[in-house]
Length: 133
Image (tube, rainbow, N blue to C red):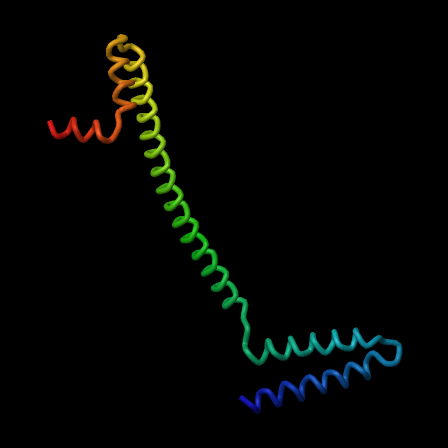
């Protein structure tokens, strides 16, 4: 590993020296750095054997992972939508039952309304006495 790093450093230095001779005196420092970086990238590509087939495999792998994740997200979304619709249906049913009960209470006669009012105003002692009977 240390030999590889040594070769890389030597290659970068050589490319830098060659760049100085090629570009001469009229070139700015940034251009020299860009040329050295480009040479290093080319050297690194040749050294580590990058190929377009490997890149194509990586792209295909990423696309497959993306499809799997999208399918999983869709499944989870459908599951939550189903739960939401079930809860909404229950809430609608409770609203319907509440409206029916309110309608039935409004249809009570005066005696029944008076009994309901009496039950609302009952004290704890009266509840205990009623339960003991």
